[in-house]
Each structure stands twice: as structure tokens, then as C-alpha cells.
Amino acid sequence: MAWQDQQQSPWGKGKGPPSPEDLLAALLTKIKETFGGERQGDGHGPAGLGGLVPLIGGVIILVMVGSASFFTIAPGERGVVLRFGAFAKLASPGLNFKIPLMDEVVKVDVEMVRKEEFGFRTATPGQRTVYATEGYDAESLMLTADKNVIDVEWIVQYKVQDPVNFIFKVGDVPTAVRDVAEATMRRIIGNMDFDYVLSNREILAGSAAREMQKVLDGYQSGVNIVTVQLQDVNPPEPVKPAFNEVNEADQDMKRLVNEAEEAYNKVIPKARGQAKEILEESHGYAAERVNEAKGDTARFLAVLKEYKQAPEVTRQRLYLETMQDVLPNLQQIHVIDEAQRGILPLLDLNSGKAGPREVKP
Image 1 (cartoon, one colour):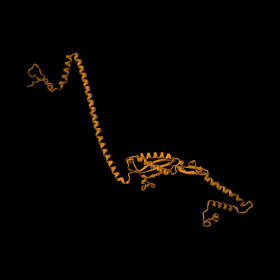
Image 2 (image 1 turned 135 degrees about the vertical axis):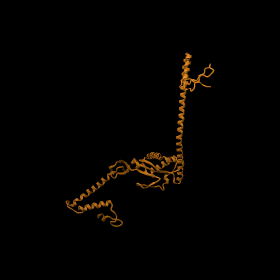
Image 3 (image 1 turned 45 degrees about the horizontal axis):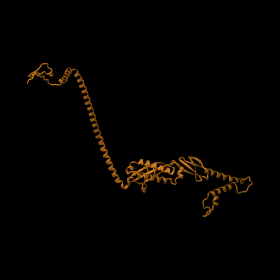
Image 4 (image 1 turned 90 degrees about the vertical axis):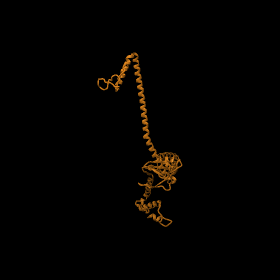
């Protein structure tokens, strides 16, 4: 080739690779040779075609400029256009225009969920993900408010919300997210007791996400916290046996308390019901006696009024009414005359016979 004959190299002729300028010069030389640019003509032959060379070169330059003036932004991305290094505009997905040699485009994926892991790392992602936990104790070991050590493994997921701030405001956004996440989690857990941390993962994760978002917004980092999830919260390995024993004792205590509450719920409500029943019965009995007394008093007063008006008649009526109530309940009736010294014959009213009979002494 022509460029191999013209290329010189410190290591020998034709040894070095050609530059783009050399390739373009070789292409122009080849075109001139093809159309007879090196021969003299009368202006009507192939030598007259030498004027096409600048035209072809201009077309090539025009094509190169045109290709450098357009760029494509994929779905889920945003393009930050920099003009002489300063922010000019934000490009949406699709075909966009830029000024060659003046504009530079930085593409930012705003749909991808970025993730930071603490206390572990994902070794092999997939359906059965393999995690590596060795060597990350400095991230996961924390001190609680009751001065116990706890091993916390968690992840932080976030997206780019503002591409401009994401590029310009913070030099290293992933490192900033890691530092803010670790500081926030250590502060929250440091204010909680050991047992509370173990039993309230979701509350702690929600508080951490809100505080992290507040700090990152203050930094103008341009990211949005999607979720903070506590993967594993356990005591450190050396104290796990003792911790398990404490848990077993705690479970036994809760079981005994539940059994006691069950017995309490069986006996106490029943006793309270019986006491309430007796109390209601006493109230009813008291009301009954009071009403009876009031009725007897009213009846007595009514009889007294009648007695004052007609004493003999009233006395006789009371006597008869009393006998009417008393006599049917008697088994034997003895009639005694005060003037009689012997025993009178007995009239047996219960035998159903009309005849009298003697009562022997």
C-alpha cells in the first residue's frame, strides 16, 4: 500500500502503525492517481477530474462533523451537556444535537438502582446468591445504648434524582453515601438498647432512610434513597451461646407469665361475676323488702283509717279474715269454753265426716 511506502519509523521502514492523517493523505493520493491527477492533459481528459479531490475531502469532513453533532440518549438515561466544561442543558432520551468541539455529553443512568452493602459483600449474584462476610467486622460491629456490641448487616439502595447535582456537587457520590449511611446507622443504634434493636428492624431502617436522605439533600448529592434494609442483626459470634441462653430464659419467663395470666383470666373474671351477682341480688332483696314494708305500712294506715271510723266492724272483719287464712292450715282444732270445766267434743273438720267424736283424756 502507498502508506507503507511512505511511513517511516525509528525501528525500520513500514514498521510503525499509520496515523489518521497519514491514512487520509494516502487516500487522497490514491484518488489523484486513479483519476490521473499526476499526468498532464488537455483539460478534457482524466486530468481534469483533479478538482474532485477537494470536493471529496469536503464531503468527508462534512460527514465527520455531522456525525459528531448528534448523539443518542438511551431510555432510562439523561444526558448532561457541557459547553466548554460548564453545564448547558439536560438531554432527554432519544436523538439530540450538540455543537462539535464545543459540547461534551455525560450520560447518567437515572433508572438504575445503585446499592451499597455494609458488613458483607455479594460474591456471586444470581438465583442462589453467595455472600462474603469475612473481613467486614469494622463495618458491622456497633455499640448500643446499654453498652452491648451488636453485629448489623444492611444495604442501602438509591437512584440518581438530579443528574446535574450528581455530577457537579459531590466528587464521589458512592463514597458519600457509604459514609453518611454508616454514620447515621451507628448514631441511631447507639441511642437504642440491644433488645430494641433486635426486635424493631423496620423502625430502625425507616428512621435511617429518612435521616440519610436529609443529610444527602443538604449535600446536594442528587440522589434519592430508595430503601434501607437490615439484612441480619445478631450478637457477635463469641457471645452467641450466652445470648441464646438468655433468650431461652426469657422465653421460659414469658411462658410462665402467659400461663399465670391464663389462670388469672379464668379465676378473676369468674369471681368478679359472682361478686357482682351477689351484689345485684342484695340490691334486689333490699328493694323487695323496702317495697313490702312500704306496702304493709300503706295497708296498715288504710286499715287504721277504717278502724277509727268503725272500730267494731273493722275488728270483726279483721278477725274473720285472719281465721280464714289460719284455719285451712291447721291439722287439729280444739274449741275450749271458759265456763266449761270438762273437755268438749272435738269437731274434726279435716276428716270429711260431719259427726262429732269424743276426745278421751
